[in-house]
Length: 303
Image (cartoon, rainbow, N blue to C red; front, side, top):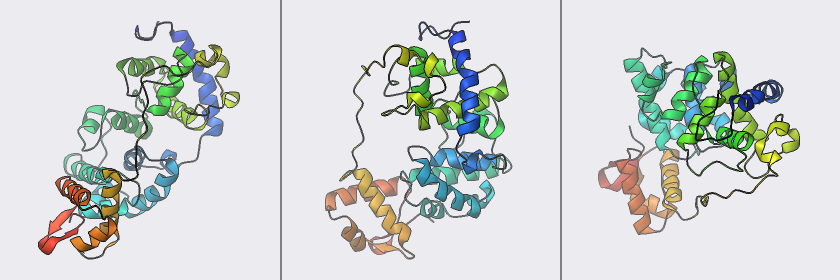
């Protein structure tokens, strides 16, 4: 059986040859992360997947632990004001994720009896849950068969199976089909495979400094056999931070997060002195539901 036509030369045999080495490597080298432990609930898995979007594990783990201690079920979070979720989000960045997770908790409470659903369609309907997160929760929380495609998985598979240095800047249909074709036939093995390939990409087959000497599939890697050809695709641009609206929004939310009473506009002006940018970002935060405007030009996190 051949892999997708969009990945010429990649055979089912080539994909199958990766399974046992990667799974055996993962059994020895997997990090002990709390959301991977058998006792972790599907809610804990969902929280971890939302927090881990564009945020390193080292920053997520302490916030995740505090979050689950305070809100061990979706129902417990759903009882709280949305602003409490934003406050507990700390410095993870992209605080709209906290609002979406709060909205998801209310949907789970109201429409799913307080239990995180286990089917892809219901998961996709939760606020803030896209294709990747739905697949990740189905496979990591319930052991269900799903095609999980994150940046690490994409990088490992395009290197090992197609010989390219890096995946495309944005996920392509060909990469999704490649990930699907690479899944083991056994559902339980497929669930472990997803997290094992992800871990291999995070720890060994990294973007900038891959450690081929430590890779369990180095001898089967098409990119290594080709002599590690350089990336020749579209330019990959890094994200700026200093002085951007993203930084400004983060500063304003942090001031509100640390406050116990509504914050006056004058105090926000001390935190970010560019008047036009500050007002633009403040308006955007209000429009996004992250900030609630009150009387006399004061602000707080949403109630």
